[in-house]
Amino acid sequence: MIKDYEQFKEAVFKLSTIDLNAYKERQMKRRLDSLIRKNGFQGYDNYVTALKTDKNVYEEFITYMTINVSEFFRNKAQWDVLEKNIFPYLFERFGKNITIWSAACSTGDEPYSLAMVLSKFMPLSNIKIIATDIDQQILSKAKVGLYNEKAIAGVPEEFKKQYFTQVGRSYKINDNLKKCIEFKQHDLLKDSYPKNCDLIVCRNVLIYFTEEAKDKIYTRFNQSLKKDGILFVGSTEQIIQSHRYNFLSDYTFFYKKAGEISR
Image (cartoon, rainbow, N blue to C red; front, side, top):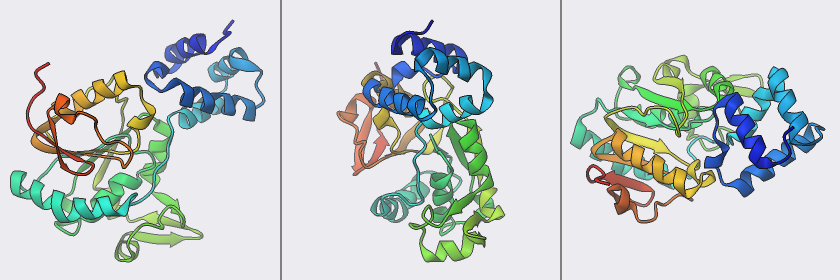
């Protein structure tokens, strides 16, 4: 019998290996309680039973609790810095054959945006981006690459014409752009990280994690980057005391790896 949130977290971990202890409890519990009420379940115990027996309920839970909110070119001014300052720096430092990881990529808006910007500097055939998320269902949507008009509102017109095809009331990503992205399932808290990255993009995700979880993730991002590589974070995620992770603030929301973490 599951009576409270603590027992619910244990049950979810056994069922999915998602550790809800790493997420801010007030935000997560509020989302969870809303989901349970919406579906008419009577408390945690009945809901866990449904998670174990109903695939649709389970998939909805994973999608809802992993907070998939994304959009193309979110916070446009930061993408301008990426294009005008960060990419030229990376090319000068590492050459154009760079390794890019879009972490917690959600529905694919971010890695596709990255590929579009990179296409200004090189042919699509030379662009390779690793894009990961914990939610397999969301990754499936990302691979399809079909978006509504609202989702692509921030896409510059030149890219809309070049990389999207209208399908009814939706817009589909060009297949050549899709080939630039390798989508993989990945848990930031427990899976191994890609090595020797030149750029890691992880935006508007860590705000939901506890300080302990963020400490672990920033440490592992440092280990994943090459020296002088760049971490690009969201507009609400400036890293307090970034020197603790051997990151230097390069531009606002962009952090350069100064060296390995000694602690």
